[in-house]
Length: 521
Image (cartoon, rainbow, N blue to C red; front, side, top):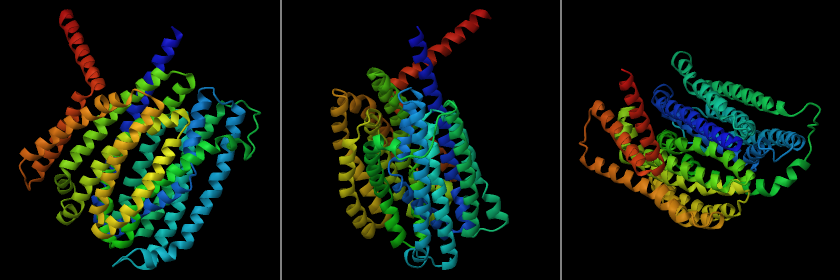
């Protein structure tokens, strides 16, 4: 009885984590995207190009992560389940803190030294002075280091499954970051220096809050436990973290190489338009992120407890949820990219340049959201060898393809490469992982959990795109975009066995409640 009750409570907690994460991530995504036309209006396309270039700086710091952030989350999850004692866990945390501080200082220093070259030789601005760009790059270096440090403490909070608090805190920080700057841009100054000085303030607030939350988690460790710095606690995790480090580095290079190359070849204003399209397409990954964030610590716990059936069950249920939300969003974005950009910005130049890029990156991200799931299995098992080899193969294919396509066809060429390589990964790599860790699951996973949903939603999206009339009215554009999103996602829900069952239960409960009320009347 107690085991059943604990399992029910764990499932309820997992569902609450996903729901809260979704609410937070959707809010963050919407507020970061909706605010973009105002950024371009008050700062100009060139300054917004610098904002897009700043994303590369954050990705550079991810290269310095060395696999330690996911290792932090995993060890915190194991500590919460009782697989790691308090003494070893606290020493492990102290060791990571020392490494993060040292590497953060090193990374910021390298970028500060390179700020002159970046501002003079790399970025191509027509209006912004070089001195202004250099100051912005120097501020980016410090902000990037602080935000990267946040990853350590965010990993601790995630591993401890304090995801409800984390979701609310992320919401607060996002509001501060994206909305709080607007009055300054409108009424004070809209230069890059002012913008990035404000972002530096927000980064300090974010780091302070996450570090305090992490130390609150450490309060469950008995007093008197020694937490002095030592390299020894990291040694047992070196194999796992080094593999994660390589695959993380490959991921950063693969996802940022096109942006880095285009920042060199495109004028800064055009690069701003490209960045905007990629950011909107990244909404597909944003809506799948909360599931992964809640799923990883839960799968680690189930694996540590030896509950293989529960692990597979939650894996498949989460797959269908992401297929509906991320897949439906990707399909809707791909089919109504032009209408959405026209409705949102009212800028025809931006729409013409960004719509094809948005469609390609949205479809690529829709496939990538599914290809990420086999990694969760490997992560829970503590064996990411296959991910290591797959990442190396991805790197070999991605870099030369992106360089060639970006130089010859710009953002559209990069979009085709992104979509094509994600499809190859989904077809070739995913079956290898499933057959290695969960034999017999692959065909059912493809057929029931992914393809049924994607094919049905894609068919609805294609039919709607052929029958919807073109219009210059922003009112009808809003109707078309809303209808496309609603019907495509609804089609995915109907094609999902898990969500269809949940929908039937909700309808049955509503009917049962209505009948009881009628009898009482």
